[in-house]
Amino acid sequence: MSKIYGSIEAGGTKFVCAIGNDQLEIIERVSYPTTNPKETLKLVIDFFNKFDLKIEGIGIGSFGPIDIQKSSKTYGYIKSSPKIEWQNFDFLGTMKKAFNCPIAWTTDVNAACFGEYSLGNGYGKDNVSYYTVGTGVGGGAISQGAFLEGASHPEMGHMFVKKNNGDTFEGICPFHKDCLEGLVSGPALEKRTGEKGKNISAINPVWNLEANYIAQCVYNTTLMLSPDIIILGGGVMKQEHLIKKIKEEFSSLMNEYVKISNLDNYITTPKLGDNAGTIGCLALAVKESKK
Ligand code: ADP
Ligand code: ZN
Image (cartoon, rainbow, N blue to C red; front, side, top):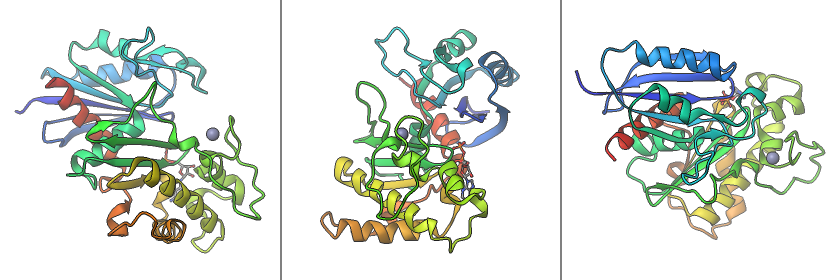
């Protein structure tokens, strides 16, 4: 049997763990609810320990904000989180104590971005931006083949966008109210309409606002990062009509200032669907084990 690698996609609602090979094929996958670190990580550790083969490397894509600065005393920690028990928790350190193998550590959205870069719509491209529009809005990017990082990881999901005339919704971001996340996340849509996201009809005018704000985000990202592709994932993007509206709004906002040769190849949903994060963590595990 080929070498095996571990993947941990740590979300605020659930942890998806998987074992896979260096071809990024998933061999076994499980999902555990995110309760508290002790309980959840015991399940995670037990899952990996049940395999007889040595795990060559593990990739973690975690909800955040997280500390990614290698020189920091709290490198590998989850920093502030609305989940009190995970605040200032040494996630990476706990996993390093449990497993004697190389462990890659990044954000959940960076991991999904890396999945699409390795095997999805970003394959063969050097500059890939990825947003997830779900319970929150998160953004990550690969630039010239490496994660875009500064003093910390980017927080593109909280960018400000210009509110449409007549949009009186005040927004739900606890920090900024009407930042992108506050205006377009799944819970924002639900507050706007009083309906579960998946039940909102395709003809509801709220989608025009949604498409315009996400298109502004794509516009900003195009101007700032000059990516080869922008991939939009997360639960809200499961509304299949939405991507077409976003492309139309984007074209009109951009007004050919930056020319995009093929819009259908430039703004896409993830080819790997909900597997983008898991495959990204596996790819990071393989990469880390070869360092
Ligand atoms: P998370 O962000 O927690 O990882 P998701 O990306 O699945 O999980 O996002 C969940 C959010 O997406 C919820 O607010 C939910 O209402 C919304 N959502 C899920 N499916 C749909 C859908 N088909 N249409 C619109 N919104 C959806
Ligand atoms: Zn915000």
